[in-house]
Length: 269
Ligand SMILES: NC(=O)c1ccc[n+]([C@@H]2O[C@H](COP(=O)([O-])OP(=O)(O)OC[C@H]3O[C@@H](n4cnc5c(N)ncnc54)[C@H](OP(=O)(O)O)[C@@H]3O)[C@@H](O)[C@H]2O)c1
Image (cartoon, rainbow, N blue to C red; front, side, top):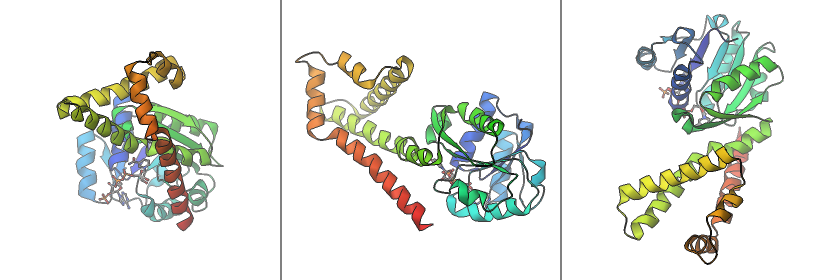
């Protein structure tokens, strides 16, 4: 049961999780304290969300049950040092990409449950995809607490740590790929004569609608594609031209390149 929550690092991800959880009622304002690098920023953000703020994590951490660590990976070691020195005994949920459970756990006491999560930016609009991996001292209840937070911001999947990194290359980086695809589809629309704004709206809504059909029906995307490709028709002509340009291989190679880069960055640490 989460009583007092401390968010360390209230930038894009920390704020997205905070606003989503308040909106969904998973957290109440009076449970939350935020800590940011700049105290003035923390104060302003706290006032805008109606939550508390603190300018130090050197003391008082034992008063919290749940810490959301949402600073950039290079800041994690100094924050872990403070947590390690404190009497905090609750659940530590880290969003930091490429900081492993082992790295998190070896710097703090073994009675702190550690969970790694890999969200993506659509958590800010309630349509996120978050991978959750449990550390060796995290209890089932802690896993459920973390899942409940991120389920209020979209979908979650509890996975192994390797799968969490793999999902980083698919869903974590995925909004980046999707924005490129939407932009390219809109360019196609403009090329054949559509105004830019209409082309962007139509491209985005079409991807959104197609994604919703896959999720709502549970049917394989190839089956849904077969339903819209009549023999000798226009859609199969469009798909054929895209396949000739290697659309599938390009996307598959993109995911592999992202994974390779992530592994390379992990090795450098
Ligand atoms: N954005 C994504 O799509 C995404 C996806 C998955 C995971 N993540 C992970 O989420 C984490 C946060 O990313 P982000 O995009 O939200 O970064 P961000 O917008 O830069 O937020 C980080 C926040 O932490 C603050 N901060 C810096 N040092 C601090 C300290 N010592 N104590 C407390 N706060 C401190 C920063 O303040 P200043 O700006 O003043 O320095 C900033 O407000 C990263 O570890 C990233 O790997 C992000």
